[in-house]
Length: 279
Image (cartoon, rainbow, N blue to C red):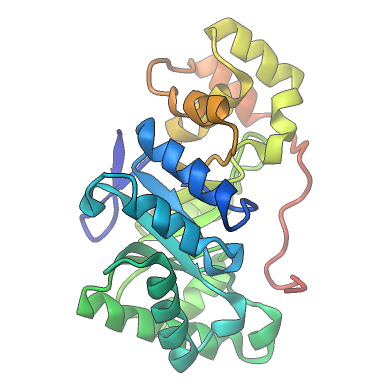
């Protein structure tokens, strides 16, 4: 499995398995177990997904050594602030039933619960996360859905620079200015919804390129982001798709194909403004 080095010199697998919208219980457990069985070593969950217990059980019962699996979870929007983050992280650790997580993210920068004081709330959360790093309970820390002004506010007081920003990235939605800002600040970009929540699979351009390279539309979309240097987090509960999404390292998109995908319009709907979310 290919990896990307973060600014703390730790490695993150460039292909992860996303669990957003996979419900707690059988679906989350079985999909994560299967993903691990076929070779995924990077699992992404969140407190807001409500499936941490099943994800943790799947990891424990996989037969794979914990240190071989890169596990991410995220802070819930209702739990921003120093004390709240302390409690929320320990609750996630308990649900996951693990001694540590490899990556912990602030899920959204400006949720409703702390909108009147989001800067201070984020800084308090970050301080708590830095302390958990010092205790060895978190290996790396980062952010999700943060834009430039959110990051600049965080960096004013941060002792540890974010290792990752997980944002919505796919062909047609590359958020170029933000991506370059993150790269300039030595942050790895993680692409969530790399298939455009499925909409990209129906794109005539994506389908045409898939025919040219002898791969599926999903594989083309994932390969596109990987060649951009982004970590990708495809999600599926279908075994054949989980397996197929992993087979993206035996082909390359050429310059023309990459340029065509670069020039795509966003056919998957606009990315939410994190300062205007209703949650």
